[in-house]
Image (cartoon, rainbow, N blue to C red; front, side, top):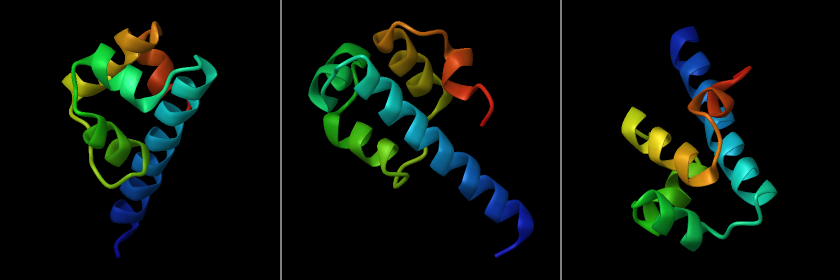
Amino acid sequence: MSNDDKNEKQFLDALAKRIASLRKSKGMTQERLAADADIDRVALANIETGKRRPTVTTVYRISAALGVHVDDVFKNL
């Protein structure tokens, strides 16, 4: 695995943890967040576990559903 691949994986893992952490801090279930963000719950679960890479549009929908600015999702990752 190249250094770039490792860095990308670390970034995606951190993004997954951030989304899950923000959801939990808002007291939301995956079902509620997925519904509010108009995405599939399994897709959200896969994003939160790093099995799926979210698109920019999906991250935007998730941040809006969480009531946070998209910058907050990416801050210090």
